[in-house]
Image 1 (cartoon, helix red, strand yellow):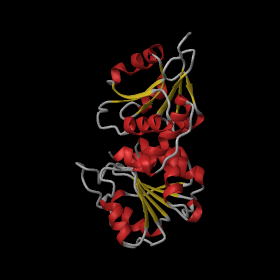
Image 2 (cartoon, helix red, strand yellow):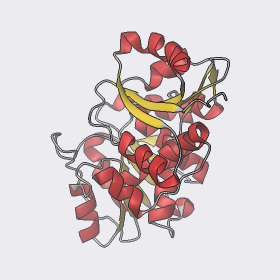
Image 3 (tube, rainbow, N blue to C red):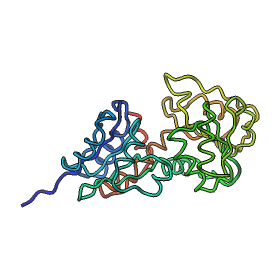
Image 4 (tube, rainbow, N blue to C red):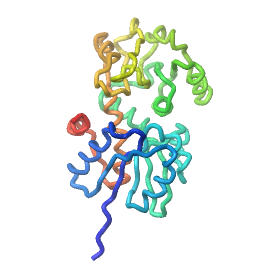
Amino acid sequence: MKESKIPLAGVIGCPIAHSKSPQIHGHWLKTLGLKGHYVPLHVKPEDLSDALRTMPKLGYVGANVTIPHKEQALEIADVVSDHAAKIGAANTLVFGGDGKIHADNTDGYGFVQNLRQSAPKWNPSAGPALVLGAGGAARAIIVALLDAGVPEILLSNRTAERAETLCQEFGPRLKSVAWDTADTTVSDAATLVNTTALGMTGKAPLTLSLKGLQTSTLVTDIVYAPLKTELLAKAEEAGCITVDGLGMLLHQAVPGFERWFGTRPAVDEATRQAALA
């Protein structure tokens, strides 16, 4: 009798030892009683193409890619989803039976699903969103917010040129705001999103003043170490609904897991605890 292959998947980064993805996928595989393995893979940028082309031959059905590989993975892929092309980066790869690499981006999906689960009354059309940062994560979140129906995005980045480039790329619903005056637009925001690493453990603090913040504003931070950043703590004190960044990581993992292992997992409290363990 021919034995069926046990599907393999993993997360590729440089570095990668810090990743919580193996804990998340491992938890789902165990609780759902599925055969399969999900492993961390440290791959240097110059080796990424060779690694991705070899993985299907080793039994891998797909992989997540994280910093610094998201843009390069998109260039290497044979088939690119419209969503990934729009964002300009890939985080989820599926290897076809023919060895072709299919690239998608689920970061924006994870971001919005996190808000919808953690703040079910969030109304994206209630007013402008103030987005801090203009990197890869910001690109995915901008696309997700526009698709969700946010009427205007006020984009602020320490390097103004990057914010202005994104405004030109994504159109008239984006407006660039100077970094040193971003706090003056806080009162206009119905949604406030930090996509920068500021406030993360070991990084510089986010010094944005929240004076004028409306209690109706939803505040979220994609940083999840610490789980409650200073931004979220201050917003909580101001009476706002806040959403931490861990849920985005959990929800972005769902589509990939389903494609690789054939079952759609649930993001619940047990999943959060598995990620935090």
